Image (cartoon, rainbow, N blue to C red; front, side, top):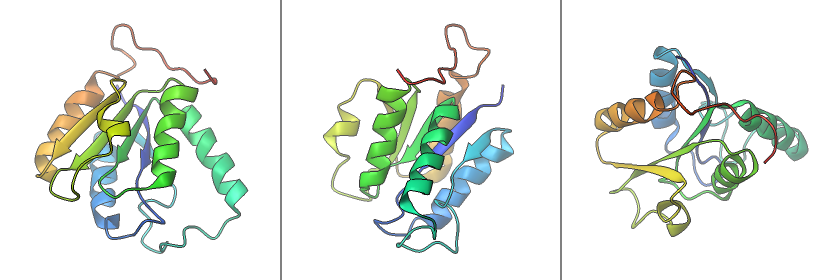
Amino acid sequence: MPLTIYFAGAISGGRGDVAHYREIIAALEHDGHRVLAGAVAAENVGADGERLESAAIFDRDIRWIADADVLVAEVSMPSTGVGYEVATARYRFGIPVICLYRAAYTKRCTAMVSGDPKIELIEYDDAAEMLGRLRATLAKYSTASEGYSRRRTPA
């Protein structure tokens, strides 16, 4: 069953991964999921971010996170904003979080992600392999899955 997925990735920390983010988002949409991504995958957004007031971006993204069934974050590029989104989804709204991390990209994944037992971490080197593992993980969160229910209000 399709999910609403909030996709998080670095913006201010660098835009070198935009094409990679777009591939992940396109694959998720192809699978029938609704992906809320904002400026993350937009080609016309630079490291300065969107041309909206910070408060408007914050309010919109918090609403989107609250509306999501699952948050998927590409965490290979360190980002304060992505960390905030991950923590908000997991600990404010109780939304499952899946983090994607390219092992060869940086020295190591932050312990705040890799050490959190409530976050599912998918380490990868090959994008096709990662997508297969991501799809299998998302299947657990289908609204038809036993024991899973959406939580849309603050915890």
